[in-house]
Amino acid sequence: MPLQIELTEFTASLASAWILAVAGSTLFLQLCKAYFAVQRRLRVRSVFAEGFLRPPGYRRRARLRLEVGEIHALLASFLVLTLLFGTVMLAGPVAIVPASITGYWLAIIFCVTAIACHHVHTLVRHLAELPAMRYALSADLALSQGLQRIARRDFAVFHDVVLGEENCAKAIVGKQGVFALCLHVQPRPASASQSPPTATFDGRRVRFPDGADFDVMQQVRRLATVAETRFSKATGSAIKVCPVLAIPGWRIECAEQPEFPVVNESNIDMIASWVRSEDSLLDEEFEQIVALLTDACVDRRYKHSAGPSQGQVLASLAARYR
Image 1 (tube, rainbow, N blue to C red):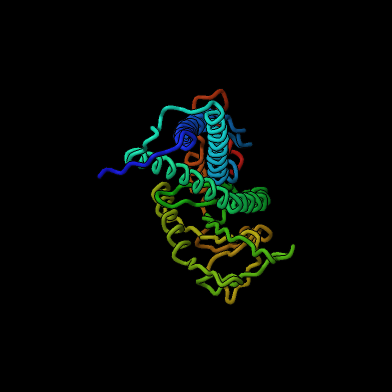
Image 2: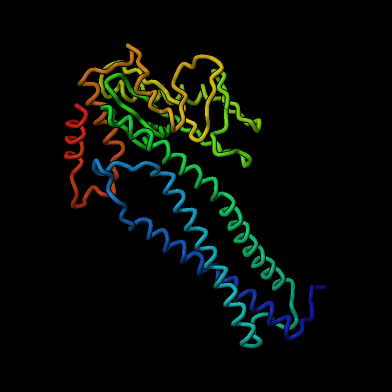
């Protein structure tokens, strides 16, 4: 015997209003997402001081904008859902769900409710991820401010460099060598005071007060190996790349002398004094690597704009760091 449930006029109107409201808000959500996607593509960002190079925190800022856009779209869809639900209920009975509801209509109501629950879950997840993303962006920008001091010492600094399948947070190039910076963002404990909390580096693993730790050796060595292969192929010489581990917002205690610099935003200047004779570059190698990284970090969206061309950017950088 097929399932059949007798509904009152009010219950049928309630079910009808719920179906229409969720369907309308879901359609509006997709329109909002399309609108924010177009806005992100058409947004004209400020040109970096040296041309069209990616500014500090470029990728993290883009991910944060995407996250905020998703939240705004979901909030707008929930507002539309409320308005549609209230409007349909005030307008009176709607002949969508019949008074004798069958299993077919129960399935529709269940699916619509599942869609609404999914939207709620997505909104909660985005809101939960937002503080960590904002902290990561602020940590990246704080580290970039420290790198500005290095840039004044005839070092070329590049942000968000993609080297094959590896993402190098920062690449620093000077006559004394090439440094590939691996950025690790660890949120500070809620009980931490104004002074930076302390983490311990034992030569292989970084250990934090809450018990969290991570093995850095494989990550930094893989990044250095990929960078060495890329730069050696471009220059035709054996280029040595020194990895750098940066943990902004933390004071790092090293149990033993590390093989590479371990820094935060305050002592990142130590990279300038990290000298190894085998890492030094010839003038030609320096210019070739700067040109390669500049080409990798040029924002392609400005390729046809009225600003300086890529060749002009390369020439200006080569003149600056010659």
